Length: 362
Image (tube, rainbow, N blue to C red; front, side, top):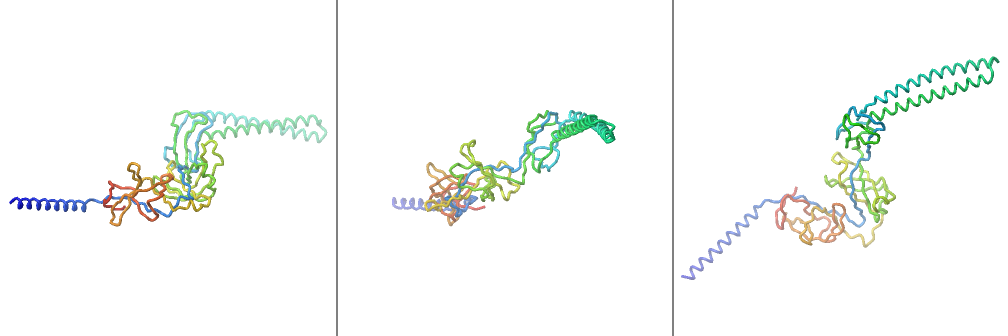
């Protein structure tokens, strides 16, 4: 009887284990796949590449101010407004300039009358001198009066031009087509000379402002092509080196390099972070041509002192692979071992990743 009871108990345990295993297998098979974004490793090598970070900026920028003090009558634009070249942006009260302009016009009229009188006197005495009815001294005196009247007229006209030119500083206009990125004045405020009232930036022409270490600046040449990656929109664009600073005295050993974007689009805005990859002009030697690859830092998984990435197996499941990393280039990391070109890694996941989890790619 004891043997029969023991056999029945053992059979029950086996049946329970089998059912539990089948249930677990059923749960595992019906688990929801994790949606992931992948990154395929290219044949890019880091041996002859220089990668630095930079910032997008407008090639055309202007801080608009005035040379005259005055209260602001009207502000015709707001932040983000697109303006055309020559469009009126700010109007400053110019009552004092209007008074000066009236005075200068009166001075010009007075000088013009004196000039005409002196001219007639000089012409009359010249005629009398030709008839021997006036002395040489009298003619010289009339000629001197005429020249002085002419000089006073010219001075009055130049003064009028100066006053008229000051009106351009009370009517602030856009020097080029662009977007208002800063407005530091309101209607009724007092505008002072040199105060930045509005900042204007052109959107069509964009460039990258990058700082290159002193150990790499000699490997970069002007007018050479470069690749630019805008991190926020994950887009790679073409660029060209247009300016290189010959000195780093005031920049802490970093050399300023400007790269013009050859094909910018409306999604790129000034102030965005960018990564610029230059191709070194130095020929790599046999010791620097290892086929190391670059992967996004966002894909790195860290567990203690270990670093790795999740890759995709043939059954479309995730598997963690440990790596040995090298240098960091902006938002990418050099892989010394563990991956090779052509492999696909998981860059981002919309759920928790672990070995064996099912995947679905975007």
